[in-house]
Image 1 (cartoon, rainbow, N blue to C red):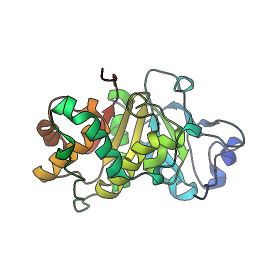
Image 2 (image 1 turned 90 degrees about the vertical axis):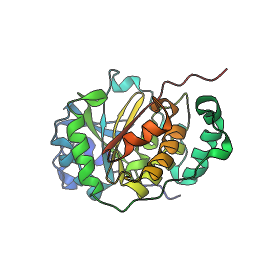
Image 3 (image 1 turned 135 degrees about the vertical axis):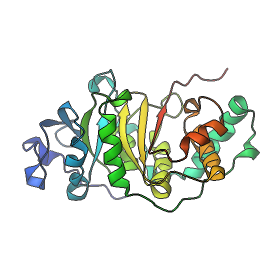
Image 4 (image 1 turned 180 degrees about the vertical axis):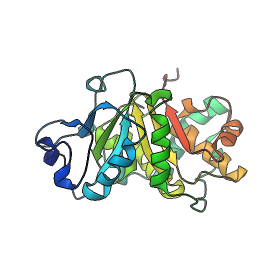
Length: 258
């Protein structure tokens, strides 16, 4: 795998990004001088900040993301060196493995009940525009209220958690790149974008959620395998919540089974 050039060092002495044709709000580069991890805004994000940062993806391969939560960023224990490459994993293999491990104990279903991946619906909205809409709303509510905007060098939005070395799902999966492989698949099938992270939560925007009930139920099985704690009731109720939903949020409070 060819390594991506990291454009962040160019922002060390130019944090507004003018050298890259950007107009960033006040912020700073975080990480080692030779290989910084991210650009991080000084102040909480406003509803307009996502659209302001979005050009960085095309100009420099820097993907916007909102970083929130109660813990300071220094307490997140980011460790990108511990992660593999998302492209080395197959999304269905990852999900099917989790389903086999947890579905019987949580849902009373066996490995043979794994339904496979949901079919991709016809794209009905622009994924980047939907991400900006979800990000704007998220800055004033939920776990991303008060979050700060960041820019992360990554091949695609789905890879941002691995590029940061995020440990949010550590009690479920230590190598978040495996989950990023699933995010890549959702990016391809549903126009998903990683919009926000907090220490234990992940929010993605969804350009084209399922409208068909049967496909929503299959997708609900994917969500269970990806994050069992996200299923608060049962697969059928979760499937209903996915129809026409513009965003999905996952949180991990995993306790190893006895």
